[in-house]
Amino acid sequence: MPWVVGPQHCSDYRSEQQCRRTSLAFYQAVRDQLPVWLLEDMRSMEALHWEEGRAATFTPSEALLYSLVHDHQPYARHLLARFSVRALEPPGPSFRCCATSAAPHLALAVRHNRLHMLRMILDTARHFGSEERQEYLDNNMCPHDVHGGKSAVHVACDLVRPECVLLLLAHGASPYVTDLAGECPLDCVLQQICKGPSNLETDVHRTLLCLGYLLLFMPKVRFQRQDELRSRAELWRTLVGEETFSWLAALSPPPLFVQAMQSLSRSVSAEQLDSLPDFLKPLDFRLQQDATL
Image 1 (cartoon, rainbow, N blue to C red):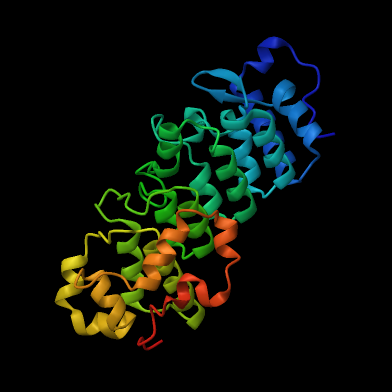
Image 2: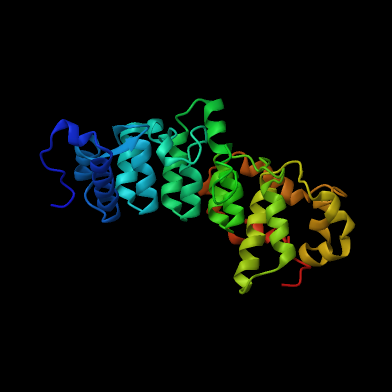
């Protein structure tokens, strides 16, 4: 079997070259969806990687990253069930651009659109203490990351993944966290609406759905581009409708129906919220009632 390291001298195991071989073997084993028991045997006894000048075994957190990349749901489920929040700890420096950056599991799950695994991670994060959990949900990624130091909610809005936006917000992630440029997820969504769809009308639909979910969890609408929105009032009235423009521009409070739904969102789970009838879902707040799509 190519993933078995075979008998080696201790010194061989400590060599960087041998670590590269075993690290690649473990990566390929997860990619090939090998059974959980075999992956755990490899991780705990055979697979090593080079970490800060020495050979190191893969931590549950690092193994979870591989399972996210390759959508190995049974392995992710095992790691989270057995190790709980230990599987959500920051991985070693060789798995991060910056040694001090936050654990990347949430953003990685969003980037690869692993909705089921994202739900598993968020359920496991409930075992953190309240402050530690909030920090885990809202931490910005490494500034050198492809998404440039943004929170998981911000990444979900960047990639127009409304299902991920809803899951994150319903589990307590904040819609107010800003990136390095001082912009929050709402700034990102409004910028995408202003630019218009890239190709398909479904892009508009999903972007408006992201907007609806954000506003559902924002009792007070705050974002960096609010003055810019007011200065281009006619454009934004066309894009999002009169009622939503007045709300975003802080010219009027949200409609009573929206206020009621905001209260509801704080008392039900993401699954319960997603199972509401269509006419109660955020897109049907008539955010786009006067918009030209």
